Length: 278
Image 1: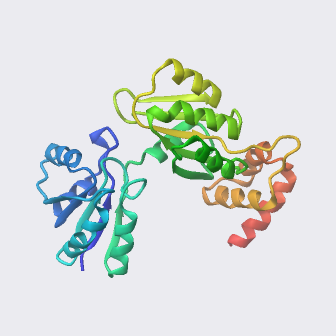
Image 2 (image 1 turned 90 degrees about the vertical axis):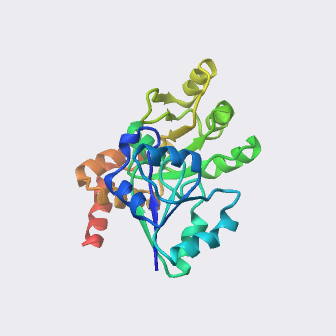
């Protein structure tokens, strides 16, 4: 039984591909590529001559049996046109089918635009929610944003340049004028990360025509004097902070600034949570 490898490829800078990814692409029986033209350039650059087939949104169901058949003969690598396969591109159905058929599925980690934008945003990274692409229609987008408006987690979403201004308008309307970071052309020559409030971002990109795909990182809801996180929300952030290695002092200080809870109350919950983990 073959292994399905999920191989992350560069989102711009070719130097970001790992040695393990290159070895895997050379060794597998077949490469299933979202965009064969883009992947062919990558393979040519690194002098890789592995057989390739297309596997994209419009043919993913009709091609699935052929890819599964290839897995019975050897290992297969799944790649997207850029970044980590399975995130906002075909992959889920194939992974599910491969597992159901008894094949091993193994990730080859590497570049990911959402994670790259998050860690460079300057916004909290201890708890975040990935939303994928926002709905295209404004009415659907506003309904969608209403469901996440009260969550305390940093929000990550993707947007195309021609919908960016409309989405920023809806984001500001539904979430308020929150801090955000808008990243484009990550790892490329013209990489840009705009950091500021949503309103300022809208004004900036109204004047400066948006180009390239955007990753938006937006601050989660912060408690005001009249708003306090629920205990469930606070406990979730405590567990995530402890898992990341934050000290009780660091964790209590950070959460006291955003949760509406007093530091001593947070310390008490940290102690209880810490005992549960031991």
